[in-house]
Length: 173
Image 1 (cartoon, rainbow, N blue to C red):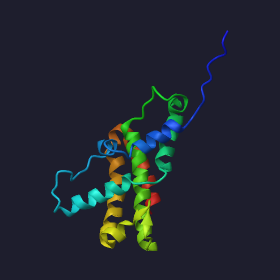
Image 2 (image 1 turned 180 degrees about the horizontal axis):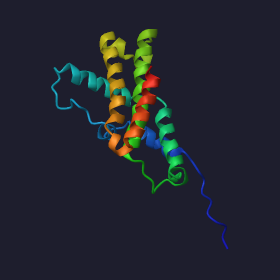
Image 3 (image 1 turned 90 degrees about the horizontal axis):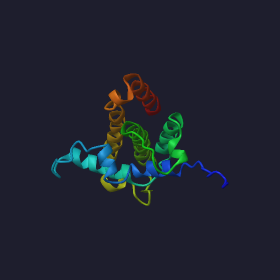
Image 4 (image 1 turned 30 degrees about the vertical axis):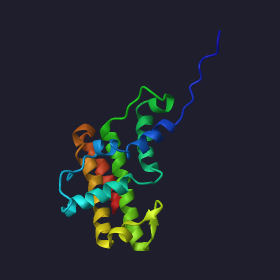
């Protein structure tokens, strides 16, 4: 008889899923822009556009990957055993995105503090758009992170959402 088929466990599928959340149209599907229909003269729409652009740009995305991998491990590990036949719910993806928004906000603020010239191979936000806009974009990303979790409190469960928000607040502080 032939030997049994060997199944190799791999995190590649989850790494690809973590990266794919930041590609369009998936990013705006998971996190619809609040001011998408606003005109170009709307300063809030401008900040939102810059924030989404920065969120989608570069990085290893290890934080979202860790969230997806932890979720997969706690729910049976389907994604580590097979390329197909598994799915991660949108509320889990949004929680992973929330952690990345906090990280990206810290990068924006750190680039200002250190007066860094480049991030991900392009000029930093404060060099391109000015310090005030960059600070606002970093703050926008923090608010977006909180919103991503709070708006999924029904799907996550109120206690789980509150616990995640509390951990995010601790990290923010």
